[in-house]
Image: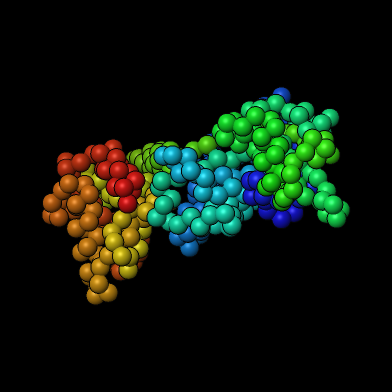
Length: 363
């Protein structure tokens, strides 16, 4: 089924019961909650990797059962809608969220496509749709509880339909009649809305599990995940080093190891290592994202050998409030994937993390 944007024309609903993650037939509400924050984190990961033209994220750990889903993008500050597309056909969640995270961000015809630069200012919501029921009439639904889909036929026999998710009517301050009339207009009805028109509507009501996450919360999740990976690798490293000869142990302690996949981590020599994914050729310097590749840094520097590295060190020193001499490029001088070191005792991992997040939010 083609993708559907909130409030625009829709295909006929799939009213069959969905299968919950525990394997039993369920409407998703009585037998346990399906929606979880990790689904939103995954949407950010998918869109971030797509906009950066980087490798798609690995398969997530959450439920992969089929459900009708919608993905909604809004500005985090004023909750201004930036895109909302989904489907009423049940799709496996891993594939469905991967598809609609991008489609809702870039293909909602009502809005300009979301750009990489505005990603840090956004909020994403995942809606899992369930418990579809045919209404006895156009008022057989409850504000704030049900989403509704209406279907009607024009004078020429052409079928039209439209839907609103459960939160739309209350967010707009509409009553039931206003919501129905608005849906008729969204579905393309041009004539005067009369009681006869409303009574001819076929209405389907449904419920929704909705979970929302801001980009800042996604960054906290990424950093926590990286920190846990670092702690595990450090623990494994300690176990391995106990079996090494003494001279090998000394070499490991002196090395500037970042500890596994940690993006920002304390090295064994006391410096703080920051993994960088550099993006040269930008119009201005900025922090774009934090991923498994590292802190995404767009760099404004002339295409002269060594200039991008010099500007990177200068920019990082500036946002951390340090002297350039306190920052050094440790690895990746000729690669986009680099490691910089912040000298021992200048700033903690937590302080550097907060400063980078603050800069990212203002970029």
